[in-house]
Length: 425
Image 1 (cartoon, rainbow, N blue to C red):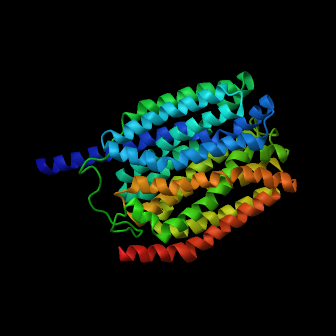
Image 2 (cartoon, helix red, strand yellow; image 1 turned 135 degrees about the vertical axis):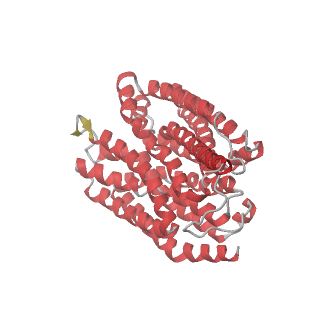
């Protein structure tokens, strides 16, 4: 082998290692903020018991967190882009680490609902900054494996809470929910802050110059203003809201549902209760779904994968609502819900970048991600439906129908609309 070819091979190996290190860094950052959303359910009943606040009013704080975590992401993505490839990602993620730590510290001291909501606001600002920057980072480093890279990044957020379900429950049981908020907030924020300084955008030659994707990708990069003028974007936005709302209901309400079904404290495995086992399995399923379905969509197409996942999701909601009153059925069907919901955070970002191009990917993804914030305000509605009907069955029926409706929209409406738009580009 010649000296020149050896140098090229060494450079290619170094570039490959660099982008996987960058991906690993944002995956860990996502793991550190997973509890902001998926660990919240562990605090709901203890907060209710300590202060007597209604479950619906406590869950409004969760809705505030989700709203700010998503609705501010276009601004946070814009700031990251304005600061430039060398400083943008690291400064925005470092700032996010500070905010998420402050949010849980405030929650640990909250003795009024207003103070609880302030903590949720701070957590939402920080979580959104970390989330949107991390996903945009993955898209830029892996144009050749977009679905897989975004799926792995989102998997950190989906599965990360599985690592701390038992520790958080133990701290709550031994020292109170306030101590859990305080110590986990400080640790999670500190890890994110340290890792942030490793992040940077790819330099020329560090990503594949040419590749042959199996899914159609736009030859044009649409600006955010152009994206907002397309029917495709708004259709994806509505679909995102419909699927996200059903999953957020499950994520926020899984502990109250288990209590109402009478299975929460039933021991099912190695001394672990139904709720503990379900939360661990749910987070693993949620995280696994994202790279798995992202990889599937890289090979068979985005809309076909949406139909497969959301169709199974509709069945899962129906099964949990109908048969979930026995402990192992609750664990299995709840896991199936999370397995078929978490992939929205890989499918929709990869579909968005395929459709509208990579140049403005961070901001465009952030605009679509705000749909999650809109869907968050449907989370307390689940409690209202449950209170009005006296059970969770109507809630599960509604979420089942929403998932089936998205399957139809993906195949019958989104697929032809996207194909015509990309053909024109």
